[in-house]
Each structure stands twice: as structure tokens, then as C-alpha cells.
Amino acid sequence: MQIHRRFPVLASTAALGLAVGVTAATADISDTDHPGAQRITRHGVGEVELGATHKSLHRRDLVGKLRHGCNLGGPNTRAAKLRGGLEGFVDYTLNNPRRVTDITVTEGGAAKGVGIGDSIRDIKHTFPHARVDHSTDRTFRLTLVRVPREHGNTPRFTFGVSTGSHHRVKVIGIPFIAFCE
Image (spheres, rainbow, N blue to C red):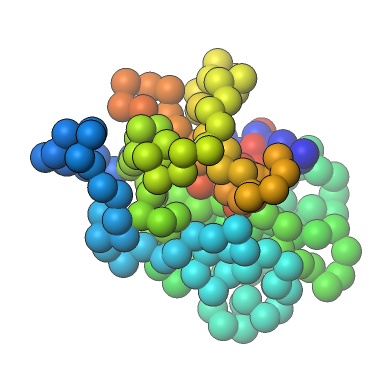
């Protein structure tokens, strides 16, 4: 599993506050909780899919210019900012043609109605098999909630929940959150 620290993403991410006027027992998470949010699946978010080439995404104005990626990954790493109603970035393979390896969403996406600003309770309500991982709480100030695929332990996507006073989703990674210093 590739893990990098990407503090600028965490520092610049603002959590959305959601006012929910129903009890947790009757709460129902739906796509209307995040109007305009693009659909997150294990294949990607909106039209940005894992395995797609940078050229095809850039041509459709879904990502920005190719730039250097995480320094910890070596001199050949590349990334690009998301566009088209999404905030975040994509990381690419080390070889040409550059293909998407992971996607990090900080705004504009939701998985079955769960998106930025929701709680662990909302995630567990929608994805009962999600696994909460507190091993990153002190280091990154994020609790990771991994939603596994139907068979196996590899995640479909990962929610990063703030450990601060609000305990809300700040970042969503497909299939994982790429941390970088």
C-alpha cells in the first residue's frame, strides 16, 4: 500500500457543516445531501477514472496541467489538479503514458450520498462493512475509514475523517488517500 503525506491538501480543506434535523436512528443518507456532487465509485469520481491517461483527461478539461508529484516518490512522480466541479488531485504512474493510480477528492464528490462534511456514523450507516482505522490519528490528524470491496481487503475508497472537534470527512481517496510531506 502506497502512503504519502500531503499536508497542503489537509490544511486547505474546509469541512462542510451539515445540519441534520433527524435522529441517528431515522437518518437516511441520500444523494440530495450533497447537491451537485459527482458520484464516487471504486472506478473513480465522475468522469475521472482509475487507469485513464492524463492526455485523455486533460483534453476533456477534467484535470489541470501535469506537474511534479510527491517528492517522497522520487523524481519521476507526476500529479494534476482536478477540475470540472471537483477539488483535489490525481496521481499518475511513473511511466508514459501517464495513467491515474489514485484520486484524492477534497470537494465536489459523494459516494452513495456520503461526502465531505459527513461523519463516521453516516459512513457506517451507508457502508456497514466499513473499517475504522485510528492508526493515523496522531500523525495526520485523520481517522481513516476504508470501504472494502465485496471480496478481499483492498479498499474501494477511503474516507479521511478529521480528529478535531468536528469529526467530519475532509478528504476521500480512491482507492486510498495519498499522503505526502
